[in-house]
Image (tube, rainbow, N blue to C red; front, side, top):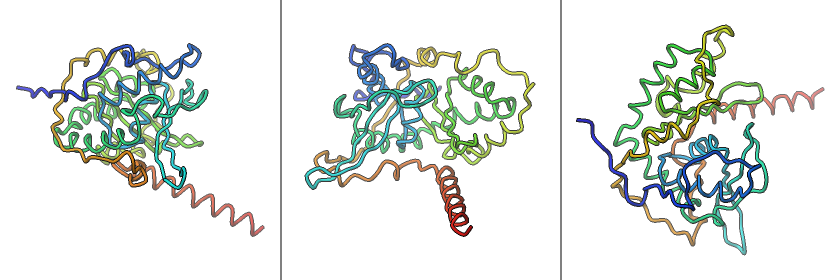
Length: 283
């Protein structure tokens, strides 16, 4: 019999007025702060992710951006999060919103706790097991990127690819809506790293038969409705963090689920830029 995971009371989604059902942020509709607040509260509570980049990928499919901010006030260091609305192209729109103006539950410390607890849960429950066969089947049958993305979404999985200005894929994050878990591709396995997908789509044919619906035409929230009753068990120890001493918190960008492939690519591009600069000076 398939094991049923129970949702920890503290992680249950609150679909009250302050945390409505998930819906993409629409900047033109106004009251952007309320739109962002409702989504981030629900997503922080219900999904599992092990890093800030994974959380950012999750928010991006709801037109929300998030960044880590660091600084010093009156001699004390601080670390925090700011949220922004995104347009259809992923560009920031309007003014950023401090997490502290929304709720403590969507702030830096809460995110670090979530990352810590999720890491153990994902490993203990082997939550990548549902994703792997779906990815294997899609990789086998679809070399056209829109068709590939649409097929995954039909199976309850969103994918967020990170690309450089030349269109090269250097990062891949998968969002399993059924198990409400976010995975970095290279963490699932080498067979699902960014380079694999870059080569897969690069070799695709323009006239390849694709699925009727594109991922933009499929409603992610409709996929979620089918898993609203999913329950988890998260009886694990989470270290207590002191909000009064944020300077002691490690950066989320350096903790949990590091995307080594993306980092290596970034270092390579930085080295190339330095070589071009030195060459320019020598002319």
